[in-house]
Amino acid sequence: MRLVIRAFTLLTTPVTVRRIGTLAVSGALLAMSGLMAASATAAAEVPETAAPQSCVIDENDRAATVDTLLHRCTSEEIIGLFEAAPVGVAPEGTLTITLLPVYQLDGRIIGYDNAQKLSTAQNRLGDSLTFTTGPSGEPWVYKDYVWGRDAGGPVVPGTSRIDGKPAWTADFSRDFGGIPISVHEYRQLTPDVWIGRDIGGVSSARANGPTGGAIVLS
Image 1 (cartoon, rainbow, N blue to C red):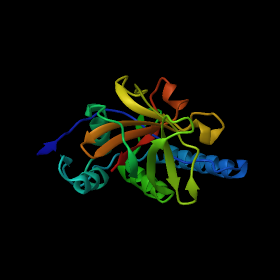
Image 2: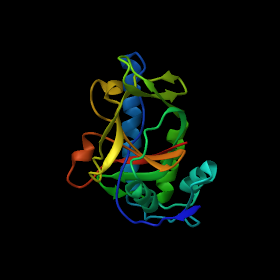
Image 3: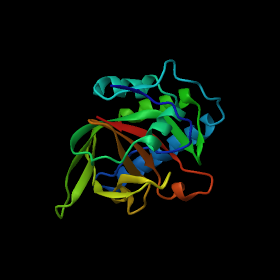
Image 4: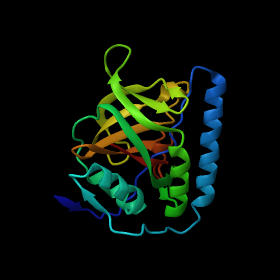
């Protein structure tokens, strides 16, 4: 079954970075986040560029779905897919994480080409999330970076900060001294693909809208 979805709405998620054991590493990652945010601010003035082909989601082909999200859906369509997806079941096991060409700054979508450059750079930091059990046996997720695993955070059924509908959420504030810089929201797009947002817990409360990007887990 092939599902064609086109939607035009606004949504969000940011840079996923983390602290490993030392304050020095945490500071470096926070600096990287600031640099990317500054780049996004400058890029926000660039007009939106559409993705080259139609946005078609194939429920029976995981690789094709990820490729479509990466190369054939506009930023608005990706945001719309997240909003339209059911909460579904929680992700489990080790899944590949891919940052998508979407970035919002206070609710405003930056140009597609610039969002694609940001997501491509961030994808080099790590390539998977591991959903397992936490320190006390609760559902937990870790970010797997090229330099190792982060402190992770609990996976709980919650409410999206973006549209107020159900979503699985994970707060990675343990990576940032208790500050909710990276908060994931997941929904099940197909039987083996989850679409998500990575937003800042503080910036998401701004009246103008959220700051952050979008992710796909497969």
